[in-house]
Image (tube, rainbow, N blue to C red):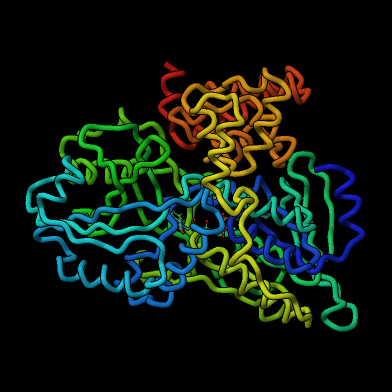
Length: 549
Ligand SMILES: Cc1cc2nc3c(=O)[nH]c(=O)nc-3n(C[C@H](O)[C@H](O)[C@H](O)COP(=O)(O)OP(=O)(O)OC[C@H]3O[C@@H](n4cnc5c(N)ncnc54)[C@H](O)[C@@H]3O)c2cc1C
């Protein structure tokens, strides 16, 4: 955090201070800044480093929510899916999903067919194809590895996938900053207090935070505080000295990541687990397979969430049952990840039945303190719109209408993404792998990365063989995208940290580039690599296990 920023922010009363820069905080920051509000965002880590990084990465209507009659949520999600395909076409892509139908499954063919029709009816205005029902033979053409025992056919339908949800956050934050928001990362909020001065709209709420890297303490003033701390919402509320009811009842969801395997499907599969009838996904993702998820109440350490042995066994067993040739074992695991869904607190519902809707909770004894409960990646934009509308009412200000429904994210800055792509490839002297990758990660902002690599050819060199990432990306992440650590650069900017070895190996190359171009000392290089490896241990990566042998 620069002293310039901290000196300036102490002198301002912000219209809104957002605590937490996951997808929800980032979306609210963008919308609020675009509507002319003076915004400050504080996150105790990097933006997108919380739950948002640990999702199944689907932008989906939530077919499953139909079972719980959450028609409003499905309709909202389907509408937002369409919006995200439009405002972030470089990040959000259509995804065909095959849902096999088995004799003796808890959900029979009629139930599935009815669900499919309802899903289509709730999204009549969509750009994606409608569902199709397949015979047994047709299902086996789509996914030859499927278990044939009791297979009756399948349904195929479309949702969307965001390979790099982390980049969705980055782009919302970049856009917020373009519109004047101030963003401070590695700033942990320690205390919320009121400082009443006359009417509510003049009143300041004081937010105290520390720079987690230096320990320095700061305080800032805001009229409205939005607690968008995801699963940490209650933890932030306890700092306010207010009697607050518990808002969050988090459930843990874990995934395993494997390379291609025998019988691996070319489309995503949505299948029912035999153990507990829960549906789970097997999804082609970023050249690998993402398999999950689980759903277990969680009360442990939110700062270090890991998959359990039982969850690994469950996901391997169920995958091997659905795709018998796969014969996956722990030896095939590349890595795993787990996160906690910030769901509304209930003490008596099964995990699966807890609503995935979002709520904006106003603190009863503190005007102007709003807490975000629940929500999905898919619906973040709408949640942000509702929150900023409410902030406008709290401030008694008539704000301009929300425009995020149409204003594309920074990486989609062209009317014709396809022609941009073609022109980019013609202009670039990089390999086709590097071109494809830059477009997929940065969208139209790939032009800026290319400029760095064109001005200095050594920045065109590859620093990770698997992804084809180039040195310019490391420089770009620190100079233009607010990366502060190697983990920020690899896990939430260049996305190299999601490769098969969670960036182990590439981390040293990236740190060497930072030494050469960003002035890192030898000591910093060693410390950053050590800190990175210590962080990614929670993913139980095979790359680190092999290192230790
Ligand atoms: C296993 C799993 C699968 C999922 N799959 C999907 C899916 O496929 N599709 C979908 O749409 N949704 C999915 N979700 C839901 C979605 O990922 C989350 O609801 C969403 O990411 C929550 O975002 P958030 O911004 O509220 O929270 P977070 O991303 O957790 O952000 C909260 C931020 O607050 C910060 N913070 C916390 N305390 C403080 C403090 N004291 N001071 C400053 N900052 C603080 C944290 O550092 C963090 O960055 C899934 C969730 C899980 C767990």
